[in-house]
Length: 364
Ligand code: 5AD
Image (cartoon, rainbow, N blue to C red; front, side):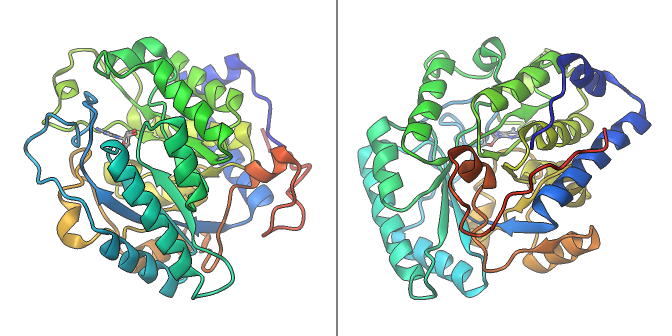
């Protein structure tokens, strides 16, 4: 069961510079994770299928106004081929990511690709490939169409749960309220719902991080993807004069550990941003409670165009495997790894587990 932590003690963790207190927190999260979820790490083969984006977020390299990158869209056959690689290599889930999709045609094309992926994957076994989508703000009907076409999970970050801070990093036509409507629509359409934030944004304080954790709790999310904010030089936020108040690496790890304890059995990814910020990012993230990694399947020649922030790093499968094992974990081949949280809150038995890890008490 998730752990109750009051606001005061959460703020104490964020504000403390005592390495011992931080290591107590990280250790508690790791113990909780091992008892509740075991040492398996689920994989999602990441396919960054298009870097087109209709939005203009102040922090992101894919923003509409950034003309310094070559825009691409992978065709359906190429996506299908990459998904087939996932099937062959025992990655039972993929994550399809793009900028915010541009209109109905792009959505219909994606839905068609999803159906083809599902059909293809059933040639490899009884279970269709698990599909996570991350394609931005769409309409209720578009989310439903994609759900029916085979996507069971959707990741849409709130970026910051503080409406003021959200407004300070987005243009006026991208509203906080709209983002909430999208999250509600995803939930209503039966997706395993994922959200997350960036940590270390200019002007963000520890109260904001606390509010983010409460936001995840309130929304009963099934998946979490959070990572440090990393400056992209060709974006307006790179020129922000507001100070960064929380140390990005430390606060990201604390945030992940607290999320693991508070949210319990959600799936939590070790973000690429964390791994780009620090060479030890993968192992640090796992030890802070992450249980999902996303090996990149995007073709080599497209990767440099999927440039959200500076120094984005990609790791090969062999490196991922050895780092995961060195940290005491193991990659879960041939497993879907759906969020246990999703099933638990609905009272449905999880197809891959007999009983959820009940009664675990962390050493805090
Ligand atoms: N630093 C870290 N994360 C970023 N993202 C976009 N730009 C950056 C950046 N500069 C994240 C956002 C977004 C996701 C696609 O990538 O959280 O939701």
